[in-house]
Amino acid sequence: MNLPPSPPGARIVAFGEHQPSGVVTNADLAERVDTSDEWIQSRVGIKERRIAGPDESVLDMAVAAGGKALAASGLAADDISLVIVATCTGLDQIPNVSASAAARLGITAPGAFDVNAACAGFCYALGIANDAVRGGSAGHVLVIGAEKLSDWIDWTDRSTCVIFADGAGAAVVGPSEAPQIGPVVWGSSGERADKIYLREHKYLHQEGQAVFRWTTTELSAVALTALERAGVAPEELTAFVPHQANLRIVEAIARKVGAPQALIARDIVTAGNTSSASIPLALSRMVGRGELPSGSTVLTLGYGAGLTYAAQVLRVP
Amino acid sequence: MAHSEQEILAGLGEIVDEIAGVPADQVTPEKSFVDDLDIDSLSMVEIAVAAQDKFGVEIPDDQLKDLKTVQDVITFIQK
Image (cartoon, rainbow over all chains, first blue to last red; front, side, top):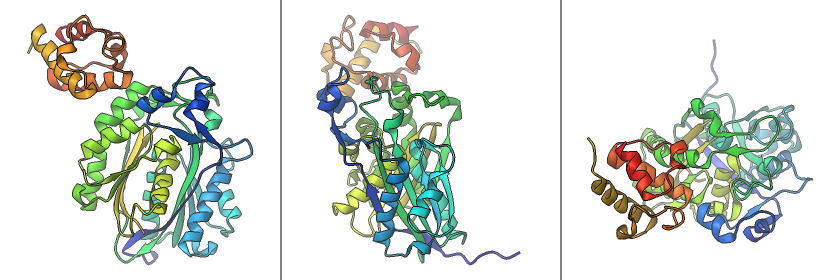
């Protein structure tokens, strides 16, 4: 039996991102529910977030972010042979987002599937893309995280409506002479599935204290394992880009990872928690602001409902 | 190993100081974490985790909501 030729490694070729135009400030939310700017900033760390209108879907945002990553890569649409969309908030169970996104981007007949690992989804999808390129199953892969949490939020529930938001981020992954994406370290804890859920098409529910305890006590070890497997020391990190769940969680995990020189992504302050979109959205915006020069070494860490988690090291194109 | 009430109070004072920046001498048994010490629900989780490391007693989230005062936590750890 034959196997395809396989490159020694894979790399990220380009990032792209999209945020809906509608800005919702803490003051806006304080008009709807019993909350305040001070309360939201001290508990969650968010100042404002973007919320999509009724005419903008998960698919629309996936296409927008994916199109920008594709344009930035300099590749033609038909150079992409696999499209993976990490999402858990599409209104349709069938069809998936990825095949429709590919068609709208002019990518002809790629492999196309969605990944639901909730807020860890982008790290899962990037891990799969890395392996698909290295295994020779795909030449270039378009990986997208796209979410419209606003469709699943009870806008009268002040414990959730202040946290979640909409947006999308994307990366093009291709072959590389030297590995520029490290091994993914992933796992799950399904016995705690009841800590974050969205059932029977109602509203997203999470147990804030349980999630806070889990993330701040158990996840730094996952991040450190990803560094170890990649052979990268914490001191070599330019940046740490964990899922933007809550600024206090981000900062607590960062302290335990112990890379004081590394820039810590605080994209949540102006983007909110966009689930699987938060890591590529933060990365793309940081690259856009010139904070991550080419060759920067970055540690990602996704975590969320499932419970699921995943981490990997990557180099910025 | 059991801890005396004084040991636990002193230990909680250090923990609350480190996590919430409330001076240890303000952490007295009758104080309410939320109303008197201005500690929010997420900081309470951090305090519970630190207390677990220090005293070896797990304080689960479903119990945590019933621990309103410093004395409630002391009593829970001693139990």
